[in-house]
Image (tube, rainbow, N blue to C red):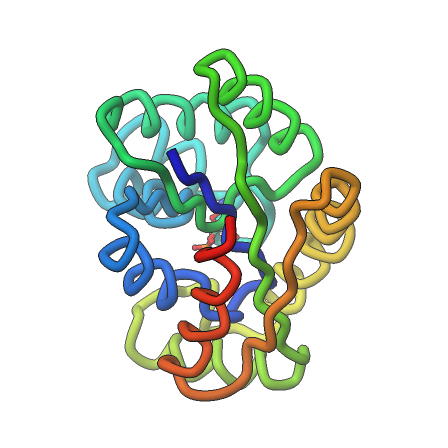
Length: 190
Ligand code: AMP
């Protein structure tokens, strides 16, 4: 299996790149944000729980998110590997993912991090908000809160994966194709 964590702040292009990479490498793409949005749209219990957190740009509690992620992996038992997009976002999630995969004799092969400056990210998110319908993309204070969550809870994961020699940074500014090429140079070696 090839298991990749696609990492980066909100708006760095994880979802866009994951859509291309999943076909190229025949991997299953799991976006925890997409799974939450699907549940909100379908008014499930999980969706009702996640909504207030997401609406304000806060992270959904770990236990809920981890259980959901495990269920998504289990649904795809035959997969060739996974692209995790938007997960893990806390150290506790990263540790759970490691032990969950090791129970299956699997591991994370690498974390590919898309690096983009914050002023560019705000512009990208506001632009996406014009068409995505995502309320968390339409309000600068919610966007700032998402960055704050990222800086305080998620950014530490760079150290977590670096300690395992699994962190690979990529310049996330440029055309979609150029960024895909940069990511592939890394994935091909994993
Ligand atoms: P995203 O689509 O990745 O930008 O995620 C949108 C929102 O979903 C985030 O702001 C969080 O509220 C929630 N979310 C997605 N993934 C996670 C995660 N791994 N842990 C906690 N909350 C998450």
